[in-house]
Length: 348
Image 1 (spheres, helix red, strand yellow):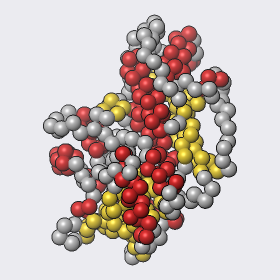
Image 2 (tube, rainbow, N blue to C red):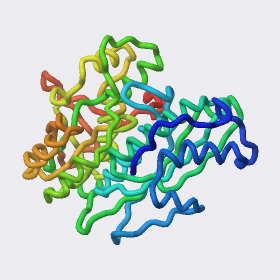
Image 3 (cartoon, one colour):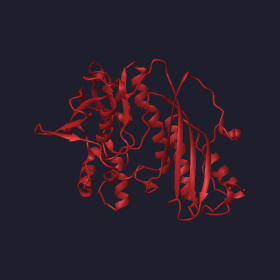
């Protein structure tokens, strides 16, 4: 799909006005001039209540998510880019090739039109980068003070090739745990704007699609056992969930986990552990140990995962519940357990 060219939107208002009942001329202008123009593709152009798409594979991967990030714009991205990338990456974590997205928008009355245009064009750019199309959607307007500007819901569909089986139950003792890059940049980028922190650096969110490195692994025939993107709760929570689901333990070398200096400093100020801070362009890759070196080489060949490292391994379950342990510089182990929601700030 191709993003729309710049245009002077001939809308009659510079903010979103309440369209009672969801219809009317203003709502049609908004849909045609903002959404349809940015997301233009043959399927969407049918202007029907449902998108009709060809099914090219016997197995489909499907996912959905809602995005309520505060602030709407942050270094390295915005709610629009986040909505596309987050859903694309969820499909990739199943080993799927992302293809189609839906997009639902809840707009607050009074949202500046230029903010909406910026968000929608950011989504179009993210779709282009990810190789997907938004083929259907919905728009609703709520009263002023009830919507925090804009909320976005996206759903995604992707194809699974024959023989691809990527899921937690395939994790085995002896597997290697690989990490696709430094951690915590997305969460710190969002929280620093929210808290008014001056980091003294151009640190940006890691928000990016992971389709490229996942495709590289699958194209090369690497038997990927499991993938997990490191969103809310970060690396530690993702690994803890996998341990619980797979009935195994994981031990990582904490010194091998890359953390940007600005992230480490901000985490200290905010009283957070970098291993629990969210990411939107990072994943763990779990493969058989014999495949680890080849997988790392493939991951490092993709820009978004060029900083990939091996951080640990999987062992037999030694306790009643699966557990992640981080080995420190002096050899001691500390447990990395799931934390409560209050300890994990909402950043998506």
